[in-house]
Image (tube, rainbow, N blue to C red):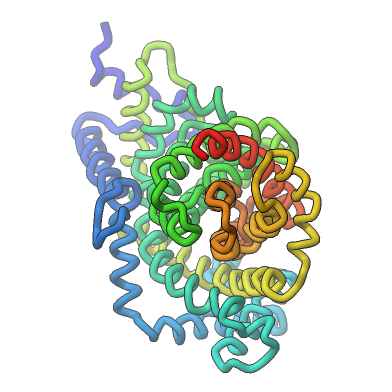
Length: 468
């Protein structure tokens, strides 16, 4: 019988022509330690929850909070510099048309089409208007642009700093290959997804929606996910963290029932994750890859157990990784891309969305067809609940802010839980998806948002009627 160490010398991933060279003997042991140590660091940073300062968080959250406190008010000037340089650099490249190498960092950061140039202009315009408090209330009010400038961005800048630079420990040293192989059969059968997407889900649940989405974006760019798979993961598994879920529960006044509140969200998210990949528009997305071909093979050779193959793939991936210096350099480029590409988009889209919610009846109009649905589900104060739910498309926190004035605790429970399971909100997740290479437009995102809302309502309301 072939020994386990003998198996480690056999072709990895079943395709010798494209896969990295299999580590042997001493190389195997070194790669094993590389996989174990760096993956453990990734798990410690992104996934393991613990109590800190009276709240449940992760190590990445502690680092983010520490840097946020250290930056203090200085983060305002960092934000203004990032957004301004983003637009000025893109405008200069568009006007001057310099001959930039295809792999140039400047080209990657600033060579954008007219749509994104316009978005960067709006982001820059809004950030200066909000800072100087000059311009229409629609933009500069504390409840519109102020939410983005004072509440969201000061968190995202330190979060992205640590998340992007440390993300390779979670994604590139074998952990995704290991967990992906172990979970592949379950995820393929239930969600029609590769097993490695389990890591995306855990990163969101215990960290933040943006972290899980960043993982998905990078995996799609590396052609480990097809367009269909990336679209499903981005709009299905980018669930907000346990910590933020508690913030929503406390804001809307159902934190006394938090255990049932979170279990309801978990159940609803699970059911939606089974349904959404099987219906349009996600089911119609093509299985095409960013590079033109898939870099993923989760098949398990007959001579291997699932666990043996999981270890084999993980160690081989760790062996193929370049030096930490090169990994850090690539991550730094990705960090600049997120800062210059995403922060202005969040300002532009998020401010407009919050402005529409605060100053126009748009969300009331959009919510009109939802009112009879809520009444049919026997939800008290349906006319107040419907607009709050639709506002979740602009920002996840809006339903809690609007819904806390609803008298019925059952209705507040439903509104709060639905705001978490809707997932798509343009102030962050939506902006990230639009900025990514995953081809989903605003109309598709809104349609997915509506479908998730309807699915969520049926499940959450059923549970709420049992509890109340």
